[in-house]
Image (cartoon, rainbow, N blue to C red; front, side, top):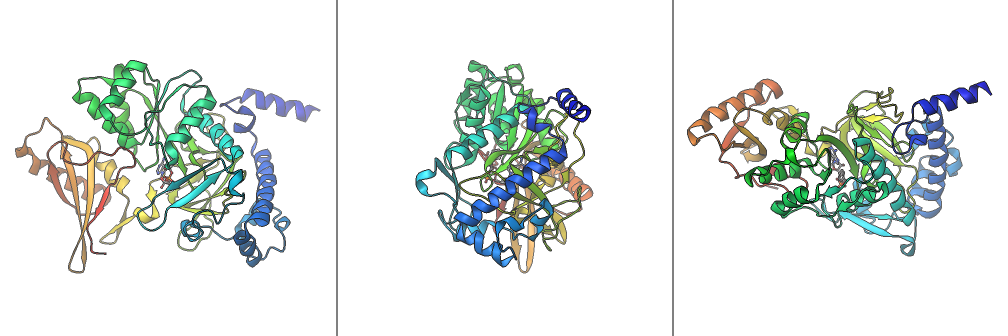
Length: 445
Ligand code: DLL
């Protein structure tokens, strides 16, 4: 009895988040729940997706019940993006079409799109997790949410939309584009929460400044920015120019969409919602699990997805996991800021570089605007990297060579690569309305 009373008391004193009964669940209980759900999800995948069944058998499972502990997860094979493409469009779905409520797809640069599906229950869980994420970032019931994530096949728009609705927050479903109008709507409607990619948030800030509108005087207080890698320097820039608290939100369509993980107000990593997902970090080369805290590729297993269960999905995203308690009282693991994708890593004369590292050097540099492009070319056998950056309007063309030298110097000293830097006049570099394209690869295919 005493033990039960103590647990109840401990839970009451750590009431945090929109779903305190799960967000602050003691780790042993969380893991018990995860194992139950993993076993159920594995049975589901076994029964309804022949491809999973065959692969699980090949991995030595005679029946799904052979998975007895979370550690047994290591015995299961990985799933990769190409597996979805190979079964285009619905081959890995565990539910017949008539039980689906929605599909989304991501285009990718080559080949067939990746198609993902949701039952009504999946959509409801997603809305819960997105509402939980909005709340963790500081949004509350009744706040107007200006949702500038793209609506359509991309999961950003509808994902954030349903989450805001679940939270009880009215949504302005503006999607991306028509940036002048976005500024007007933010000011006129008094939005308190802004959802957008970080690069588009910056584009909105820039257009507002050009219109003579001070967004810092708007009602905006909270931003949920994600769908692409961004840096701490970019966070400071966005916060200073819009006057809000910017939270990092992570997700991917293969697993759900936005709201797989989100920062809380402690901003010490993104809480990955462990009652619905299992997170691992592996060595991208060997596939071996890495100890907590070590950087590697994030691998996610879904625990409750009905339409498209995912077993050990290799995200290609590079990050670290922390399970130490968070100051906010949530017990769910924290995924540290995703620096970039494995596929986006550039190897420049032997140095591994992510575009977000270059961003961190550029943003806030005197005279330089936070817009940039990395251009890859091939000269003979050698890959050549150049960097296009923009000057701030107050600087004259005469200043550009000096600014270029300053940027090249800081790139060299902070990242260790020699880049050929061109400073261009304001507005030259294309602005994004969704995910920014940071790298222009002109190398022959
Ligand atoms: O980008 C879902 C999303 C929408 C997340 C809105 C957050 C906000 P996909 O189009 O499938 O889904 O792209 C997923 O985007 O594997 C990462 O490489 C990248 N990504 C997403 N969020 C972040 C983030 C959506 N906060 C891919 N930081 C992922 C860094 C991110 N990269």
